[in-house]
Length: 222
Image (tube, rainbow, N blue to C red):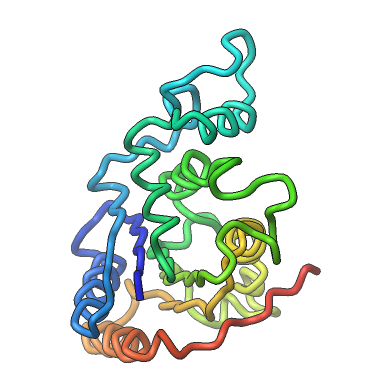
């Protein structure tokens, strides 16, 4: 498989860093092709504006979707944005590795989506959901949380984690055609022992050795 791993954590020695490194090593050892986007190492700018483009559709009024459509027609994306778009088009499976911050993705990762998932390349009129540009591809969230597992149940203090992840699963992945795999969630690694974290990494590596056979999950719309 061709696998893209998008990694968003500022500390390489974190559990997220360990999960990222484990994924790269395990997948490559299994014979998969792996490309990565280490957003903090890349110093990826999350601010979406005219810097996304080398072309201008309307110099008097900036509407991002219209500029994206124009850029997609005339090869007008900035080189670093086009490079990320090429990774998306290339991959069979996309994995996001990040910490759950404020019940969502880190700003750098959201900004990557805002800039890279462009109209005309990642979606278009009539090319969403079942007819999405990335139909046939799969996506997987690998995340860590600050709280314990009980905090992320339906009756937990923070609520159901599946509902927290739905804006990504449904609103980004499925919207652009990706099918969704069960998320990999490490609950409260900062509160775990070294042995517990090591076991979590072993479980992650074990899962990844069988990732090609995994069945996608259903994401409800309510």
